[in-house]
Image (cartoon, rainbow, N blue to C red; front, side, top):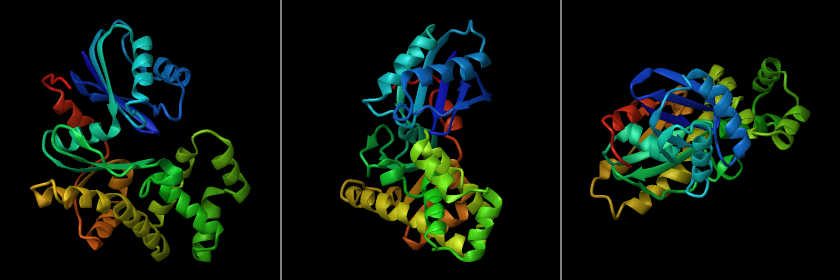
Length: 291
């Protein structure tokens, strides 16, 4: 049995290569935001309850947000502790998971637009160091958290029309005091900020919301993709490989029209967009291929 996990900051999707249609969802696992005890609890209460405890996993491939070389061992150790009857455990970044899921063994620029955002160049085997994402406070342009942050900030700073502001208060029942409390005083504020993105989805045809979304996605390209392509221009023999961007994530999928418009304005093409790389990762690891 081979278990594959694709984990973002909000949710984790798990499936067996032998039964890829049966997908189990748990909370997101991010070692930058959760300690070993919290991760352990998620695995015990949300994952193992969905599998026969007598399962023997030959391999677990875990691709996750926050799984840097420094933090990946935390996830690996916790998996080993909870799923002790596993022969081999591999923990890699969500970017490598996105690259393998989208491109297989072909080169391309790959981006994640979900609760957070990230991007890189993939040469078909390894990742080329890209522009750092920097998280929802310093970066994460184009992500759900970034869109939510922009929306809330623009409403309270009177940057959006009165009708949009009134719609926001009527639909969310939020107050400035509550938002400040949730963002600065409670855990996982990035998820909370991303929860405002559906408001923009519902009102995407309003000119002010349309402009806000375009600016969020243009900022993603200007601050992440354009600097990356400058780095790659002298080392990549295929110009098409750095003019097309492939995406993983719910934000990329839900806002495909606005994302495409922003990309076109800046001279880029949108390639494949998938909500999850899981199907591609199943194909990548079947038959078994060593990392």
